[in-house]
Image 1 (cartoon, rainbow, N blue to C red):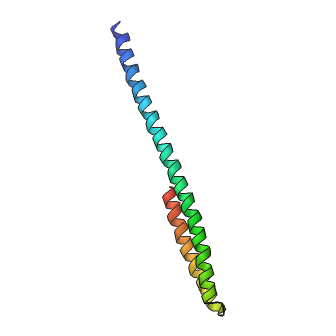
Image 2: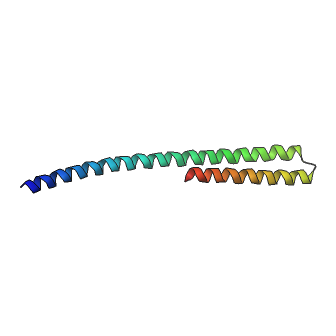
Image 3: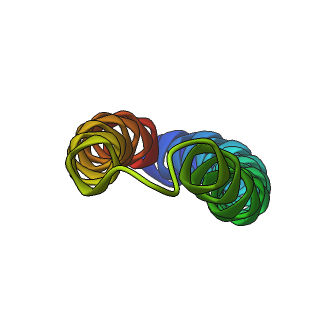
Length: 91
């Protein structure tokens, strides 16, 4: 009889731990979902800013092909760095 009582207590303890882990898992999933939404929002904003930046730079350097190519190269580097940062944030 005593072993059944101990078993019952252990089962209760395990069920409480399981419930706590389920609650934590749910909270973590909600946090991940919120971070994904934030990242998507930032990606959209970044894309918009990139379009604006390219337009402004191209307008300023419209006559010089070499300047345009340099700006594109610089922009590609900046975008690459931003992508690395966003990828790091997603991990």
